[in-house]
Image (tube, rainbow, N blue to C red; front, side, top):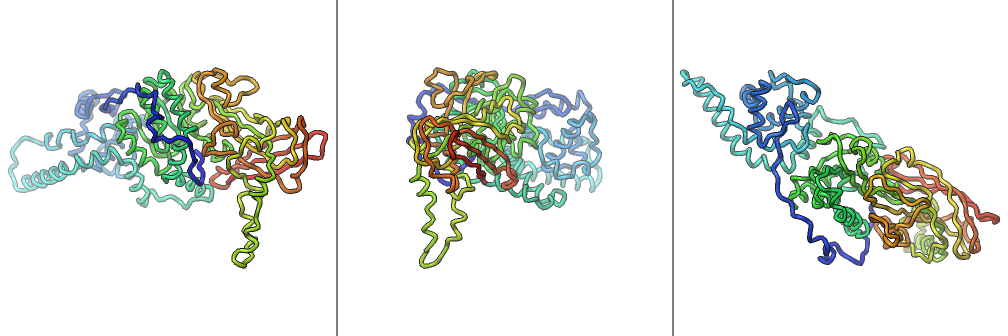
Length: 545
């Protein structure tokens, strides 16, 4: 989900109707009614009335009677529902309902059961006055009380229908805002780490970044083609989309026949994602959950498939893979499928003195309208310490790339994501100057949960040519440019401008390390190299912040 400062230019457009050819057979979704889950069991009912009546008969719990006794308005009834569900979830089969004070806390505006159909159906329940004593009142106090109740009920009935629709679309966001404003919910001032993490999620709240990713047809087509091309894998399955963004991957899965899709994201984009899901009539399948996957409570214990677009610059910038691994370890059923299933990190040398000269040209800052601004050169993108992100043509790469890390998504661990790995590269042509290093990644979508890549590795751009099952794409110079581009690490001047011959082997190591900046999502890359039998060697560290 890493983003670029500018949109990716592309030879095709998502708006081009020709891009949809071959998908006409995708079945339109039928609207479904969400079942109502019992307070005290996993039993489901076609409507709220039948569920409430069952609880009264089997568990001696009169929900509507308790509403009347406690004089609950619509907001209080929402809290009451979530209080009961939270108590039962904690193992209490007989929640105390003797006082409103038991559930006054704003936390009970947060749903215990995601997509709780009862919350959307409170206006369908019998009126509290249906339980009133049928005897005729004999004094003015009784008459006044009934008049007040009837007036309150009329006001409530006039607002509930409209509010019920509002709840269905935006209730969770309303709860977040209300809770954030309550004295009890005020959080202590964030640490610098938390501020960086918060800034990361806020960056995904804006349209431009999502437009850039959606217009990246290499990326988006790969997910679409794999999901639509393997509808049998998704049919009637439960899917978890980690970092759902606009919900595009979730909607692919729903259209492919998934029974339920849970889309999770911690940025404000979820507000738009819900609107998009409703607009496309997929709300009966897709549930959008706001929060970090490590902190939210999902409405299911296990899922059959996890789909996520978690990749960042140089693959691991943003550290989102940690969250995907957490989701895998906590929610993926045995034998479940990871989409994508594998990634490989590749390293290659850069030899292009003209490219370096252009990127290192700081003469502009020496005289700006007669003023010396050379201090600005320290913050230039290509300054020996920053990882640049840009497209590089194949002719600037004088050797076959080497895989220095293989990431099987079914088994990789967070500990595996900070490492030092060896590499060895043989030059395919002589060069006048070794100018830097390039890092890119290949991504693979294998349809078999136990599938493996060929031993020794394979280029993503060669995957289809080899007749392999599934989909693959590269972010390197062997494919079309993507919004990830290629990570570029230029050498210091004293290490450049050294000629090497065809067949020369350069060996060394690549290290990845997380940095605390940007909420722990920044990346440090260190490379040590030595051209055997020559004086060409060095060691350098770059950062992507």
